[in-house]
Image 1 (spheres, rainbow, N blue to C red):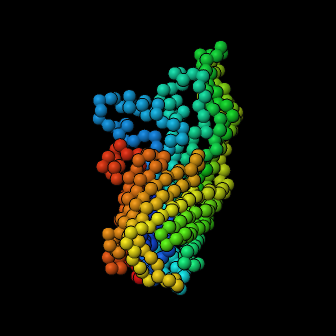
Image 2: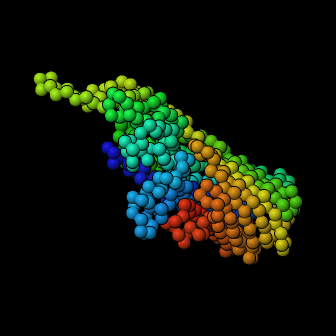
Image 3: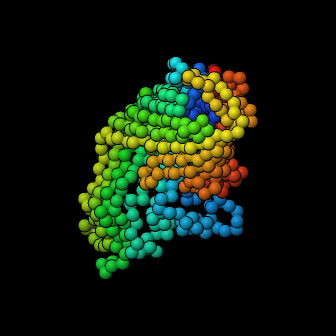
Length: 457
């Protein structure tokens, strides 16, 4: 049974691994994928369609508290010493993040001179787990060495999702300065597991009754899942989880909003709010709760062959009476991680003109500099990234972008991206941590984003 429970969780860690931090692709070149990050982005083509599965692929893996090098670097230290060093350095809000998104279907077409429509379906995996520093130290060192210290249950915070998303968007040019857009989404969740807002403490201390006393104080914890249990059995079939992302699981709705505004032909602002939505989990749900207080002073064994006692059963019954645990299959609502993007960009250099589907021709500049902010709302606090960037066009068909990012993982992340137009084929690719590619073991994060689309101008 324990192995069956681990299978879906293991799948979450290895299947594609992660929704990319896509700030590099935000407001870059004339790329159809830009509409997924900002439905209010400007478009200047008649229609586009992507190669199924290869239209857009986003992958990111990150850890704020530890790297593989911290544990496995051959530096003469024992693994014990390295592990203890990690325990000393991690903080309560450190986390491990795995994200991915694959565009299974993506396309769009121009409705009229001012309006562009887009639609598609993508699959997403999103996993975040905060490192419970207190209990990591408790399990490693044991409670005998940590007397009188309270270990907080609130540090258990995690969320995992596997879902499919149907979407339909519209981008409309209001006037020569303003372009607005929105995208409606239908979520189909095949798996969700989350725990948050837990409370209570575990403490061990000396007393006069016994050598040590162990206490649970005001424990109130819960874990809720959907898609993990079906007909009383744990789902351990990966294909079953994937199939339910296509109108086969629990459903929800969401909205994206975005705009592009030109203060001048050279200075523009772009902004968007992505995944303002929720999922209602009502199928194959299971919720577990634990609530209460408990004091354990050890077991006082008494040997009586004529009246044997089942001490362990007595202990279990006493624990269950004072610390109430429940299971139910009630429906619940899970909110999507809201994402906020904003960028200010100044364009300069040689001017080129291109026929637009608006009332005027649009000016394009070969170079641009700017600043952008990318935020993802997470259980404990927002994940914030601030990026400075420089864009240049080698030709009208080849664009590049270099970035410098400060975020939770590092204060010095260098990224790069390219976009190519070969006839009707648009090819793009981004890496947000160039130095991390050379040293994966010592990197706290790596993010990759690439895709191929056909664009008809």
